[in-house]
Image (cartoon, rainbow, N blue to C red; front, side, top):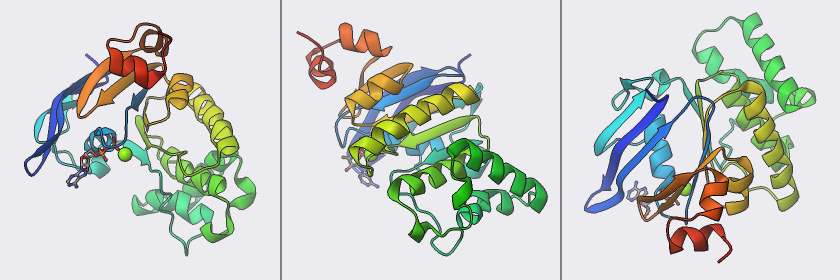
Length: 238
Ligand code: ADP
Ligand code: MG
């Protein structure tokens, strides 16, 4: 039994089918990167896993249990978006701890959890600031902190670095990779950046127009692409 089984998932918006039956089995500890051109359905698939988009057909199984209809808050899954969506009037500490506060975690315990995450992300000195006083990279760290503090069984990232400049993108990439190793956690990560996919993934899922083209290790996908699209997209040698 897989940790997360995406079982023949389809998505229709009106008359348009944007996911045409996606099958992926994700194991605990995987860093699965969904990659593909803009509009191919990556975010839609991620939103369905998070419970933010309904599933038209197929089944999502988490630890063998069907979660199609499970409320997002009860999925034990945390998502980091491309746009930081922080509360501007709240401090960094408030933003990170907000989810815990909603769940009525006692203040002392909350403070401890916030400190631990802030240490991990090296934003301890920023805890009293407001989001408006932070750089883009710092804001993205806070967004990650908000996900980390929940200690979920699964992290979803939707193009978390695409608003950052090139240098910072590379730095953050390394940090996300280290976090994955350190926390020994499971991540599904969306990007349209091939290099990002190659460096982060334990496995890559290449998508095109709502269909899965290939699923494999970075090396398999790069060295042994299943078709011309994958070869072209991943920049494989011909
Ligand atoms: P990606 O994240 O790979 O860029 P998306 O999952 O955002 O792609 O979108 C896949 C397709 O679904 C696109 O053609 C997009 O226009 C369409 N789509 C996404 N959300 C909606 C929606 N709420 N209503 C109608 N069409 C949508
Ligand atoms: Mg997207």
